[in-house]
Image (cartoon, rainbow, N blue to C red; front, side, top):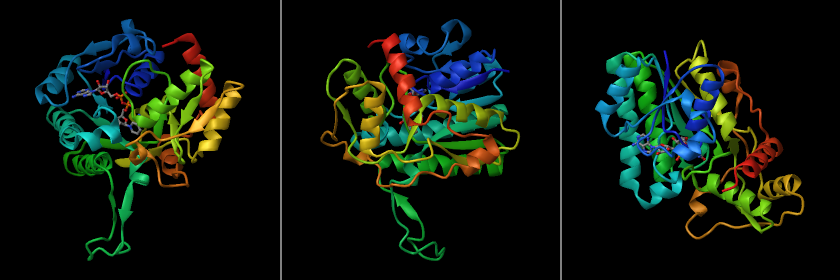
Length: 319
Ligand SMILES: NC(=O)c1ccc[n+]([C@@H]2O[C@H](COP(=O)([O-])OP(=O)(O)OC[C@H]3O[C@@H](n4cnc5c(N)ncnc54)[C@H](O)[C@@H]3O)[C@@H](O)[C@H]2O)c1
């Protein structure tokens, strides 16, 4: 039975590549598929591209029934993630929350066994409050998200866990770190695009810019590996998992990393106006032990390996 991968962007295309490399033929659903960019990641002859839309529930059901789908990876999200949701909250809330509910409902009525949904490590840092220190009877017992995007991801996790609890769907929500990696199309979040732009400039001998704050990254190939592990895991435990590099990278570590891969690269730190909201306020990394125990996930790409792989890919695919 093929897996349905919804959203064929930075991470979804890598999930499809891994499935193809083990001789599966995944179905990729994306209403705005960037064919050329996807084709640089995965052999288009070995996937089935369809044009459904998570905001059109019947198109999801049609895709599930037509292709006899048993497992879904849902990676669709609003354009530019945190930054995009700050500019157009309603559209992001609709796409991220109702889009995911539509996927979970379609899974419920068609009997799909497992749904793996992209959450985000923003839920490990864009939070504040919890002033009542976990006291259930008090109104501020637990921290609350401080951006619209993080609020949608928190909702998605809670809804997915309830579909698992009450409807028998095996659910995993994956908290990816800020993701970067090979991709020539548009998409990803602010940080994904900053790293790609920085590497492009460094390779072209121009000054590169990296975020001025600490970030917890994940290489897109690792985000996809963790996702496929969640598709495969025997006992998923209906859970949320951190899928990151497992450590926080400071701006100088990122600058040094780029200069190691592109000797002589000049790197400055900057957050263009309005983008500071996408910077982390944490300097400790996520705990990967649950992802290790249940999924077998540990990052294959730490910073240096990730930047090196990205540089090699960008030299082969200049954009
Ligand atoms: N990129 C990151 O830094 C990052 C970090 C943490 C979590 N995430 C999450 O991981 C997931 C994948 O992120 P990405 O970087 O690959 O994003 P992306 O923007 O590269 O890809 C998302 C894809 O979803 C598609 N899409 C948009 N609306 C759709 C709809 N209505 N129906 C079906 N498909 C639709 C887009 O066309 C796009 O190809 C998202 O849920 C995102 O929130 C990303």
